[in-house]
Length: 405
Image 1 (cartoon, rainbow, N blue to C red):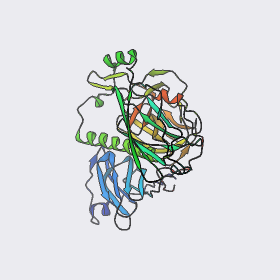
Image 2 (image 1 turned 30 degrees about the horizontal axis):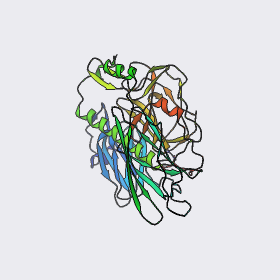
Image 3 (image 1 turned 180 degrees about the horizontal axis):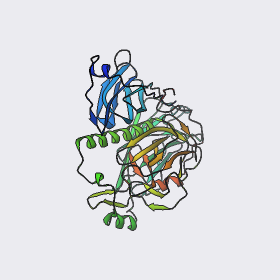
Image 4 (image 1 turned 90 degrees about the vertical axis):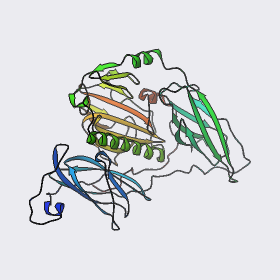
């Protein structure tokens, strides 16, 4: 369940460790310094990645962050009990949060019939994928009790479907010509067999190559073209860390969808996946999502069933919502103007999870939609033709945050 974030009046005396003294106002991101207090598992590592702040919860689980600016900041905790993410809305100098990690729901991957050891060839779909493609892998008729490993240096975990076949997803990164798969098969007698294979990757379409060579020329606010300050760099690194954490949660979560994926908006696509980008003539990058036309306030829908893993305000992406769909899949919705969902919410396919905005580094209102396997971006339009629709219920997940409202 989502976290309860309650604002209170700033207690300046406790903040500065003295009573009756006038405080000195600290400036961070152009806002008054504040204090966040909270509770997490005893000894948990607690951080605000966007601000580069870290602390340890004491033996009673209490923690404090001083010198925090007003705003919406993600609080993360890591402990033997698991990972928890929650959003702290700091207003008027203070906020209080509670993080209670719990185990991600599991599945009976190892529950298979006993019998003679048998192995089966690994099937790939598509047989020769393009860069930035999502791969479906199947191994039917193998008597292994578990299959796991790495594909393109990303972890993969196979799960038994209702047809007793092992199934898993993986991703082909951009700018690669081959994909290496190193898998391990564990059998009932305890034997582990390692099997390696290499998959050829097709050349990217000519239009993608041409777009990367001649990037779109975009104009954004001047602040996004200036050399990054220490605070900005720290914030960008922290937001990358949060995105990686969401990917790790997705890998540990079984598949939660039961229907095909859908577009988050029915409007026209204004910029496709893998196109080149040049901002104000100096900042060049690859576009790792799909942009949809939209006016301020237009609805944005969840592309499929999942759990909201992250709601935050990012420096470049603006207001974001990340949804974990399980089996490694994450969808992200950037530059939003409003977010009616909270961390820990279970959302359904087609549910409104945000509104089109122009927050972050943008040229105007639109939706930027991403799909990632762990932290590898793939063409979001490819997930619309994903053939694997889980044929069984792997359990009900409460999501990465178990705090109460």
